[in-house]
Image (tube, rainbow, N blue to C red; front, side):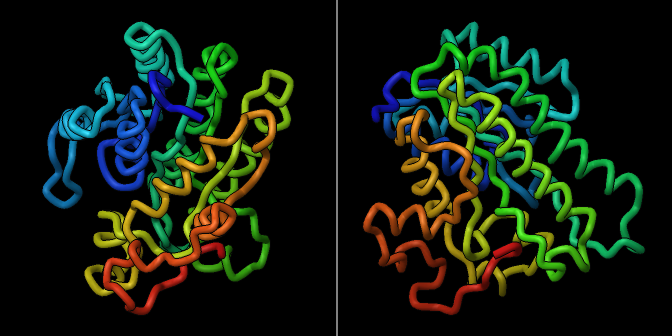
Length: 272
């Protein structure tokens, strides 16, 4: 399935996994809407919507950088309108923007709880809502959300209840939309990594350089996303995929090239 001239609206695409998916699709000729907050570079995180757009165009795609805080539905509406105005429609939505705080219940402040719910749950929901009318007119339309399979083993709830329930809600939104939008031939799937991924969030919030060295690069998620989005939207919907399984189904089982440290020990991600 060709991505030539298809338009992908990607939240949080200024860095990390979102940018990696953007670059992968751009190399296949896609138009990318970089919908993220960063217009000035944060030294700890790196990247802005403008630097990402530049890289996307260098990779072979067309890019539109739009500042968008998905907590604000007016900003979402503005970003979607600009995307349609520039590229004529939306074929792919990637729900990548997310907030994380692995705090216990006693340590979780209301503002942190609200931030995760406003971005992960409310933001994802209303970005989907804004894109659906355009996806209905899209070519092989797909929604792909970066969220885990819903696993009710309590080990994934204890220690960070607030974060876990938001990520599971992202998946529930996606699986619900798969059924709701089936009659419009719009696919909706979730995708999650088997191991930790080398991103600024992992380095700054989770485990520093030591955990980065036990992680895989963002390219594994980008490649898995590519294969999911390549599938006919009428046939591939309602799944909560793990990156390794997606690649294995394509006959790719040697994943050594994705390790930050070749041959090194890998750290299993949450929820799997």
